[in-house]
Each structure stands twice: as C-alpha cells, then as structure tokens.
Length: 337
Image (cartoon, rainbow, N blue to C red; front, top):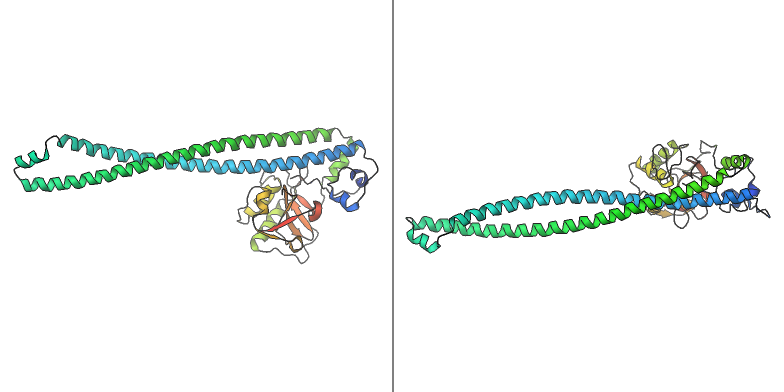
C-alpha cells in the first residue's frame, strides 16, 4: 500500500524533493531542506499525501468488506437453521393435528356412559389409561411446539438484525471504495500535470531496482510458519500493488501479509490494524524475518521484516512489491505471529 517515504533513486534531486515531502525516508535521513520549494515539489508532496489518505481508506474498505463477508456467512447459516426449524415445526403441527382429529372423532360420548355400555369394562379401562398417557404425551408435544416456535421467532429476529447490519456494511464498503478511487484519481491527475522530466524522476523514486535482499546475515525466522511466510512474500516480489487485493496476482499492503501467512497455514486478519494485534508485540531491535511490521499510529501500513534492516511490502499504486528499509516510516511496531 502507500508508503510515501520513498527511497531516493540515483539521479533523483533529493534536496529539492525534501522540502514538502516531509514523510520521505531518504529526505529525513539526509536532513536536506531547501529554502523554497518548486511547484513540482508541492505536487509531489500532494501526491504522497493523497496516497497516504487512500491507504487509510483502503484499510477501512478492507475492514468493512471483511465484516460484510462474515455477516453474509452468518445470515446464510441463520437462514438454513430457520428453514430446518420451520420444517420441524410443520411436522410437529401435523402430528398434533392428526392426534387431535382422532380424539375428536372418538370422544363424542361421555366416558362414564361408554364404561357402562362396554361389553368388556376392563378393556375399556386399559384403553382409557392409554388415552390418558397419550394426552399427557400430546401436552408435552404441544409444549415442545411452543418452545420451537419461540426459538424460531428469536432466530428470525436475529437474522433480521444481521441483515440490517449487512446492509450498513455494504454501504460502508461502497463509501470507502469511492473515497479510495477519488484519492487515487486525484493523485493521477497531479502526476499527469508534472513535466516529463519531473514525472520520470518521480517514477524513478517510486521504483526499486532491487530484486534480491542484500543478505540475511545471521537473522533467522522465529518459527517454521514464519519461514514459510517469508518464502511466500519473496515469491511475490515485483507483483503489482492493487488496492483491496490479497493475491496472488496483486496485493495491497495488508493483503500481501495475509496471503503470505496463508501460504504457511496461518489465518491472519484482513486489515493492517488487525494484523498489528495478531501476535506478540516485540521491540524492533528483536525483529526476526517473518515478523509483521506496522506503521503510523493507526497502523494503516504494514510490511514483513526480512532481516538486515529490511522489510518487504506492497508500497502504493505504481510501485510493485519490493524491499525497503524498516525505518522508511518512523514509529514501526513489530508483531511476532
């Protein structure tokens, strides 16, 4: 996703870019601040800011979409359960109806008169006892039916509530999607307003020519699942940033981390905020390959630590999955899954 603290590529005018791109990791490291910023520098800063805002909106979109998926599943399960309960209630009603009909047809004579006229009083008394037991059973069935109908009413009310929540979540997904698209479209218009030379310089700064991590050194993943996630993330190097995507052909920042750990058999939350709390918090100084690194107070960007002071991440539109320094954005938080 959007990491607008970009590394400055060779030949890029880092001093000029640092004035308004205050979020740039390279500029922060160099501490270069020219006296005045050129108009194109202001445009670059606006583009970076729009990318950051789009990134936050994308994570909000991912969260709303994840919630909508869960609600759809819950509603579907509830509807299946309601259908089964309705079938059971219908069967109970049929059984009670048949029994009531039989009793009505045979119960038109006073029991004492039937006993008086019976050729075999003992047989009648035996039948009457069985009828009493049957009536008690019928009363139990009636109570079961009433209980089942009460549960069914509760299930229907809960399903209705979840459907209402689902509709709200759907609207939130649409709203966040529109926000992202608006921010990205605005950023594209600003980029298109740059001169060819400035756009080329911006594109160079937005690209990483590294395809191999410059050595792990002695750093080893903390577990087998972390090692598998590292291997999966490395296999995604060079794949495009696609907002709202979680692989395998493209990724946003949290999508890359979720997909990489899924290849290791670990189910992580869809959002970078959820991924921040998906394990044990550890100091950056103790980070090992495979650890999840989130950025900003709102955890709106995330990458995976790879060792040697590097993370792998999906930066922002136009920048494919790549390696960057772990300190590209100050205030990194590390989570061991």
